[in-house]
Image (cartoon, rainbow, N blue to C red; front, side):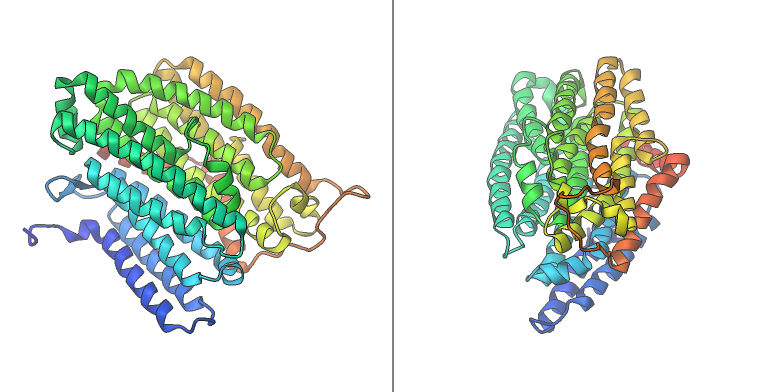
Length: 484
């Protein structure tokens, strides 16, 4: 059986696991108080190699490759998300290297937990049954427990870690209960077989579906499953907050799409309406709550709730156009978050926080970090000519074509309203400081790797904003292999 397996198709996961072992051994060999530069560059080199493997398999020849009796699928869809995850983790490792070296005591553990979370995300993207999805979800989530609480010198980080643990444990229990109901009613955990069996036990199966969706909605911080997000985003180290906002959310989207469209396609008339309601509530609630925030990390937490609502708006289309819109916007959102958190991370490290006081007058003596943050925020707001504008056009067009004109209208209005709080941050960075106002005088100098990563991220959003065809083609291949 082993000889018949195509291990090349799972070379990404094998590469990540091997890299984890190398990073662990290297960290153990180095002296406790020695700089972790070798660990950083080993991680970067390893991730670049893994990224090359993933890109080389895209689009996969011959369609999907199944492993372990169909429990694990490697197709264009899963490879798209793996590339997205690797880009997010790699970007974080590069821009956060100085932050980690100067701020964290457990530096080696940080990189090991990042790779562990990445492995869990990749498993989620390829999972084709409920138990495999659960294993990937828990591998990612448990890694984030440690990452959120890794700043042992910060009470806020410890508090955030405990809150994340408590809320995530509750969502895991709900998810497992839903899985047990679906398994009990259908006798299987494989997505395709669940779709066939649910028609025979519709009522009880529907209850299980609701519990499963509730568990996944927690990972997306959809209202009313969002209560953990603001405190955890604020208390976690800024690079970890970036990963929670982009990669963790994208992983939830990846598995949720496969569950909905493969395991529960015959219930789409029910879950599409549920998604539409929750998307509208999340867009309205997330944006309205973001208005009142003066802490940028907390503001981005509420913004991420609204961003998840935008992506769910495209899901309700239940067709290829909707999935394409989700994938396109997810990739854009990753680069926007990288750009935003390049500046936010070093504001937190060098100015003691990331609030309006710390960014006041930033552009006067630190134009590069201010410019990077500005373009990233405008991308999230969906202002042309950024890629966020193109992504929202795809999302709202898919919703309108599916008959959800009201939902697209809510999304459009909320997107316009969100410009207000994004511009508040930009205004604080670029306005003149009046006499008597509290301001941090220290100039914000970004390390070269962080500057390069920030420039690359915002350049991507601007290029895709005026020339979206390459990313559109990239997503089309993933959607094609997913839908056939």
